[in-house]
Amino acid sequence: MDDAFNAAHVQPLLDAVAPIFNEPLGTAIEHDDLSIDAVRNDFAAGESALCNFIADALVERTRLAGYPVDFAAIDASCIAANVPAGPLTFGDWFDVMPFADTIRLCRITGAELALLLDDNARRADRPDEAHTERGFLHFSRGLRYRIRLGATRAAAAAVDVTVNEAPLDEAPGREYTVACTSFMHMLAGTWQKQASDRWHMQWFDPQTLPKEDTRLFLRDELVAYIRTHGGVTAEGGCRRDGRVVVVR
Image (tube, rainbow, N blue to C red; front, side, top):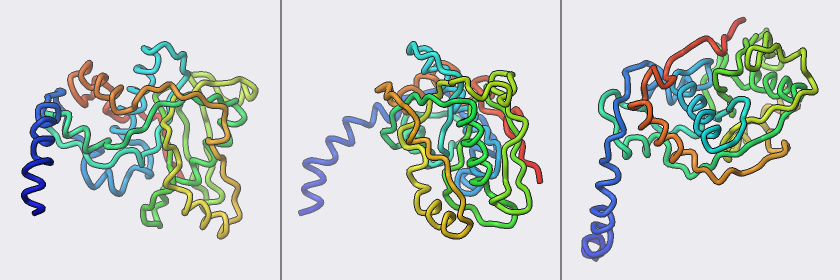
């Protein structure tokens, strides 16, 4: 009976969407940061070419929609699969990003951003610990900084921060507009609770920031960006450029 139901109802739906999922978007370059191992284990260890690509795309697409953003932030948990090198289809990218996240705009002051970046430094993977989902954020090219790991997770901090080439500590009262996803830090709640109980640390909650939902769907905007740049390419931003450096 299940086979009969599938034949009568499910297969026609699959046939209808097949042309969409088979639509070519361009080409994906071969890069270690696009591998399945990187997606599973390395996204919170520091800079990622794939996350750079997505964050830079978020800035360009949001600005094209008329929103004057200063930079973008993405939670790597929005990425569900690796990007195979070679011809890239919509179905391939749907596997990478199957979620229906929208793009939000958050307003954050320089002082709050400093707290957020220190928080992010404490979420980074450390050489002596296994990877787990901690809500580590990646940023677009306009934000550059170093993560100083320190002797313990609680001692980790962000240093030498610049936003669009201006030192962050020179403008603590300035307000920035950040493009981000609607799912930021959602999967990190369990780890935050355990870490708070263990290290008694306070976390910066971006959900408390003033925000506006643009009603732009993240996946749709990224597909448009990918088409514009011929795929997931170095020219489109899929490369490391030193925007975040992790040091002891």
